[in-house]
Image 1 (cartoon, rainbow, N blue to C red):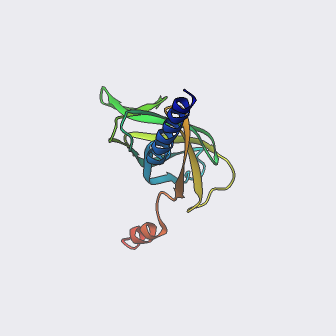
Image 2 (image 1 turned 180 degrees about the vertical axis):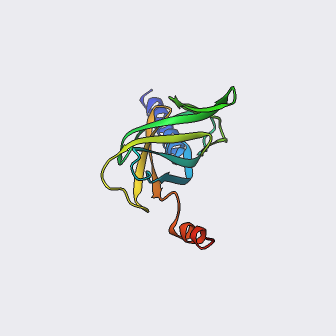
Image 3 (image 1 turned 120 degrees about the vertical axis):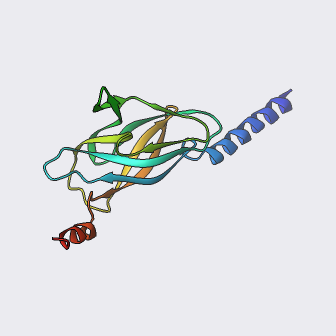
Length: 157
């Protein structure tokens, strides 16, 4: 009887370890992640990414916090009666094998009250909850307009 229980426990442990190896950080992958530096005088900005559900089941994703910002929320841009607005969303369900695109005009991270001096190229860790479990991803801080784009724009005048 003890051998059966031991073998069962070992099989359960191995299957759980295999799931963790496949699932990675909550079964999601994050690509093209960036946070725009706040404009001068602004106390908020947004973050964007491509979040893929690499697991075999639907998952719930929410934002817990983002380094260098006092507050972080998941927002959705919507249109109603010809007007565009934004609303806070507590969590988003991503179906198995599907992706959530955090992008302008759609879902995005809304970040409030930057802490300290933020610089182009700096990394901010974004702390998500995936089905209630923590997962941390790196987002690169970027200027909204690169110096090259500004030079190209001014060369036309």
